Image (cartoon, rainbow, N blue to C red; front, side):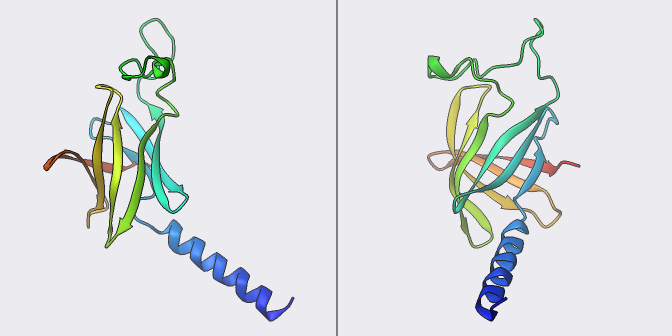
Length: 140
């Protein structure tokens, strides 16, 4: 193998390892423990998708849907698989300028993610300058 090819493989491997080590990436439980969200890279940002619900079915035995979405065309999509967070950019140990969607209210908020020293994740949703924070725990 040529030295330049080997150097490229090593560089790509190290870049992937550094990106994978980002403390916001992985699976997280919401504060109530009712949902698990997987945060992963999407292009040069991070996004989060609901991958598990404690109660994934309605009383009728059907998968829960995004029933409160303001767009009637989106109300039949399943909650499991729903992209909950999107467009976060890395900035000095935080992820900022993202959006978080609340399927219970059907509203989307400006948001930021901050890894805490204890291994939890501070998730903030904001309207103007008023923010509300939750602490998510890493899922096993």
